[in-house]
Amino acid sequence: IRLGYRHFDTAQMYGNEREIGEGVRASGIKREEVFVVTKVAPDNLAPRPLERSVKESIGHLRLGEIDLLLLHWPNKGVPLKDTIDALCNVKREGLARHIGVSNYTVALLDEADTLSEGRLVCNQFECHPFIDQSKVLAACRKHDMAPIAYTPIARGGARRDATLQAVGKRHGKSAAQVSLRYLVQQGIGVIPRTSKVERLAENIAIFDFELSEDEMAEIAKLASPGGRIVDWAWSPQWDR
Image (cartoon, rainbow, N blue to C red; front, side, top):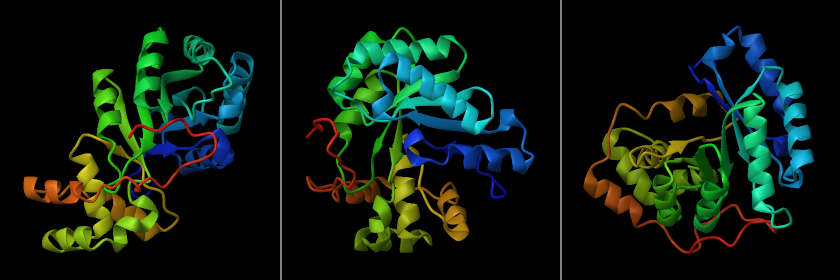
């Protein structure tokens, strides 16, 4: 917060909603100056569990309504229509200002957009230079959803990559900063994770340089079929 961050990303699965809320309140920052995101766990996607869990999240955060509420992962065991209807309902009830999804494939984005009465504002998904997410990005733009990248530094993999290091050296930036800048220049929001204050400062210092078209093309070549990092038993059938 002292460095200027005002966007806070949490989730029911992370188990730190209480701490996020406590930190925001202790900072003295006005509530309207911060943007808090939380996500509904996949086990809570049936209508009643979804509404109950959202109210629990609000109780943990103690910040009033949630700025952005996402469905964390798809759940094949719950009809998507039931989940989307419940998500729209909690927004109508004033529990969330905005709603969206996370880890949705092209097919799921198409279906969710058709089912939703309200606008789904974003899709949060794994995105970094080592994975080709062009199909998902195209679907996000088709449905006017903001693409938000988690693991944008590939869990540290960007720091070790020779290409990103070389590009960074030309600009006086780190390889991680180049990775973030690469995504931002494509209109992708980034939410890098770190526990180090110096990394927080580094991650936000990416708006004073620009990658050339040649550099963007060079970095794009890093994507490979095996570039995905986050994959679980409950993951959907990813786009290839």
